[in-house]
Length: 113
Length: 114
Image (cartoon, chains in turn red, blue):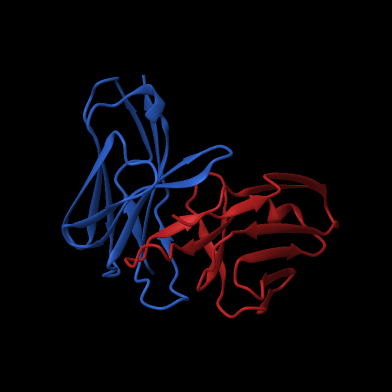
């Protein structure tokens, strides 16, 4: 089974600060996804990165896929309290040919006003 | 709107009981998943199914079984509930035909075993 390691596990920052969350693996992934989960809800997809070196922007969020397709990062500019939540990276386990979707441990982000 | 519906938001069961968690999706997805979510451990895959009657073990299948008799329904069964199975359980479904297919989640079932 391929593994996804996220860091940091917990981040508490003030409104207006910038932050970066990392998702790393020793294995190559054909694509990686980022999800955001709010308390009491299931995760919701933010973005999928497919091409090595790809950068995608979603308003203040910037997602990057590593050149070797083993890692990804999520950068938030000028964080706001509404960004508070659990951020999860996910990818399809290439050791299974049946679409097995695995997740990292998650990064809990708290943005204080 | 894609919908993944889990039968209960909250459940309290006694140790030793057989527990059924039900999940239904309305988008004709082939793949369905059951995850367990605990603080600091992220989402851990219990079982998933890639077709009717087809299943594959995830990372933590011990103490659980699953059933998929119809494409839209995927059930998680705790054969004999134990206190260490107290957790949040999330069901998801996806096509996963292309690299950009999204997984859709239910709202979760918070199970407490006493």
